[in-house]
Length: 582
Ligand code: 5AD
Ligand code: SF4
Figure (cartoon, rainbow, N blue to C red):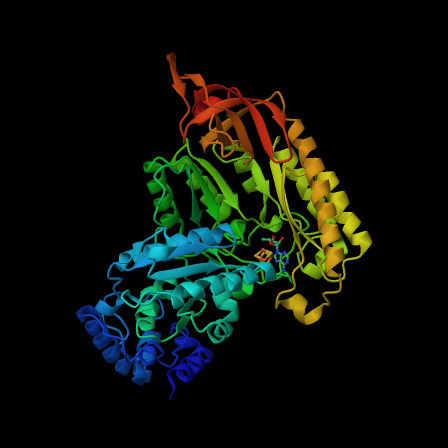
């Protein structure tokens, strides 16, 4: 049986679901070797290795191998237990240099570090210089068509780099990682023969094996989605020593199935990382001196850690009032409020944020905790997507405009001074001018501090199969422009209200626009710019200090725009001491 056939059948048989989807292509590199080439002794040795490897690969993994993998579904691919057609040596990076390029959301930034962590353990080196790379990996996004087009264009540029590669160097390998690998699978391999490996969002542990297969000139892919992969034990490597903040992934995937969204198809089912491993990572970051952690997930507040049996009681999750889910209510496990409480107790001087939440999962316990705990930022992202109940229903968001507005009021009452942000889509299937005006009115009514606005981009989702993408492109763009204008006007007004206030700012470094200014973020995550001058330290009035990245300072706000605040610095402080002044 052909190995691919075997694996495809295996996927249908449930218990074999842990078997990687391994796609092998005919060997190109060997047949491409020009007859005039005179390989160096190192290269001859490498060719020998490759020939030997190819003959082993040609026979493929045996059916017994798949059965063996299936009998241990929880086991992750391990360096000491490679599949029979790859030796431990072949899994090693042998100091090859990897260049990683990230596209899309914050989850992808985090995934890039997970992929790097796996490769680093395997003996690869990282380079920030494209020209010296032996392996180029693009961590991709599929959420809108434009994001995918960017990758196709980038591949054209990389093709030239691969073709021009000197024969004295090891062949350049190119990989597509993440959502686009998951969504397009063979289409990428067929359209771009220069792509050597594909790894879906749940296959990063398999990168050393995929690269080992690619060594022989074969294309290799693993796009199997997992029900339990959270990379809990793969701590991302903190690469920037001057960093003040870090992202910590707490859950992956999404069960919501909003009708426009590709995420459930590219990232799979929702699963949460065990609380203990999250706390361990946050403690490490605190020890390294980081001052801000953002908990990350596609649906961060539906967190549910069921790994500890004693907490698996039958109590259902509390939803926000007037909200429903597209799935059966989830029961038991350690929930988001518990995690947020624990994380915020690790280091009282460390700010805690989270993104991206769904409005349905804001029970009162979460709001109360955010209100009470000094180091949990009073900032909530509440993606509305539309202001029209009719469109919200077509989107399968599980709430009406009225329920959403009521939640906004409730949040504002529970957390005075909270900063709010949202996502909106302009021109979704069937959106009329009246629907659009309702979105405009929601923007006016709520007056968000930050907004992320997009024109609808048809993806192969439920909407693709059941609805019509009937809003013309120019209308989508016109509506988007209108939303952006209204959002900016309202954000400017909302930010104006902070003129004259004193805000706690975590310093990030010098402003990009001016070397004499510093830049940081306030509690609401807005950028604050202020002159880099000497100031008093609140705990030691004898010394004058200059603020450094990672310091907390108090800034008096003097002017604002829709996206930035400006002011002058009052003193250096701590998060704990600042509550008396802000
Ligand atoms: N078209 C446009 N925007 C989309 N988003 C998700 N899917 C699409 C799509 N098909 C937006 C939503 C989501 C954000 C991350 O991206 O607003 O909240
Ligand atoms: Fe997509 Fe909806 Fe899930 Fe967000 S909640 S990732 S928009 S399906």
